Length: 275
Image 1 (tube, one colour):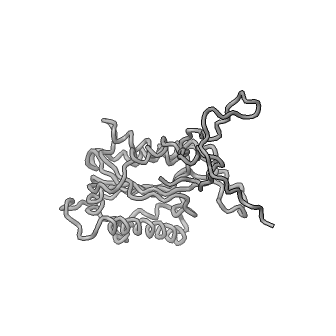
Image 2: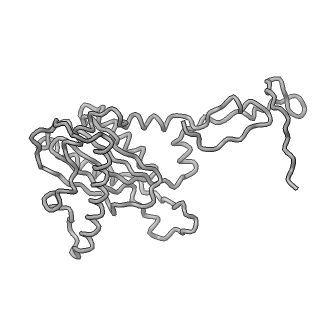
Image 3: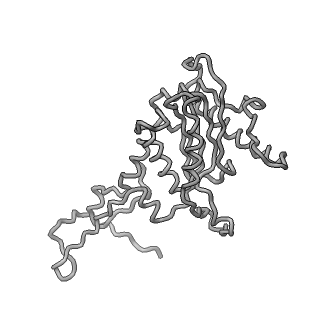
């Protein structure tokens, strides 16, 4: 027989109420001021996320070709972690101990770039901090950047490793006005990046000798190349967040105290809280 619920009217708990013995106060409503990043590290949440960054270089291609070298060294320096799958039926294998912190593709145009990344928990914050520092640093390589998309807890990686490709194709009128909406343009770019990942996987299967399967893709499969005019247009749209905006979420507390937390009996609420 189900237990009858207590319909007693909640009453306000005052600071004068004491526990057993009358000499100690019990503050059941106090929550730790824990940030989101600290919670992720403590719980070791099995997040594998995808982030797409679009940006503008501080100088032209001929003067700053070291962006690819910089990111190659930076990503290789990221700590290797083990990402446990959410599916509890899956078991860790010996290969699971060597999970790459970041995979994806960096496309560098004469004045613009687009960076598709699939990253682990620890790598995400490091990449955002580095991007924000590069923009604010006088000697940084990047003038401005926007986060085109972030997808948390993706099921699998689309790129087997991290690579880059320089595209020297110039555009006559970079400031041309596209006919589509920013949302439609963003979806089109994201779709091309996913099709580019599939193209890379198919070429690896065909090419038994290995090598760079993206060596001439901008000539052989120009339809997979994101439009520079569209990237430049999206950079001017205020609807996309910056690295600094997202980094602020890591310092915000996830435990919020409500007025209902100060009543007895305590109420139950879902977690996490969406602000």
